[in-house]
Image (tube, rainbow, N blue to C red; front, side, top):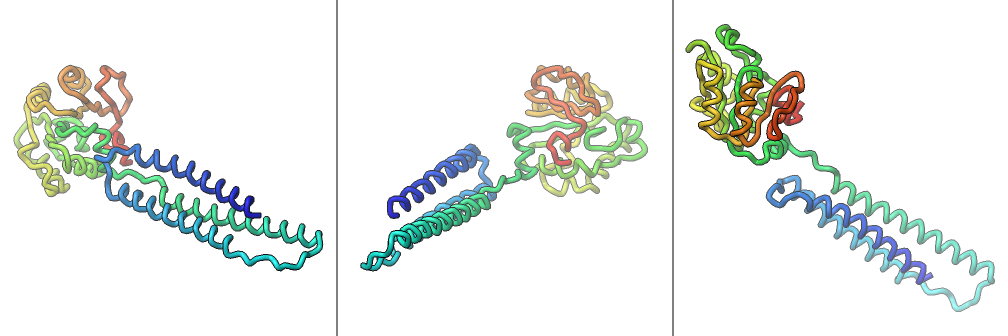
Length: 273
């Protein structure tokens, strides 16, 4: 009986060790620089799970040591077989139940942690610190300078991503306009949408030009880590000078360079919709 109990406990410890090894390897594959509140919570959960399992094993071992001694009288052979069999079944059942409880506790603490939008943005931008982005068709509903003469409307679906980028990136927005009134409409639309309230973007970082290639000049002077544009010609021209580019296009274009990515929209690139 004692040997059987030790074997069962040894198997439990081995199973737990293997299970914990897998969980630890998944957890610590995350860079320490990227640890956030949720990751720290997972580490705390690990400590609690280890403590819980240690106490569980200790209580099981103690219960085995505290079992009452058999009476001196010798029972019949059939009684001995019956008692031994029942004891084995009871111990095996308890062990299985406690093993399951320990694994359930560990599973609860090691549920997959869904990354926040901020974490996704940083990962997708490869920790880039400066981003330039055109307005038409990316941030604004309008797709041509002529439409801006009538109105300017910030796309509601892109707003959350845009604000997240401004939290850790130096963001510049730029566009070609036909007159001063268009500039005012764009700035008013951005202000009404709350783009300037986060503190990461100011009006001086919204740039306007009168020709399409003026945007190319802005980007080359600013030397960003990323540029976002919907004009394939500008994307092609800048491919040699900018580290990464995101080409916004409703139809997936042919990839012109290894450093050029494509997406139907800015928010879809970050998986926020």
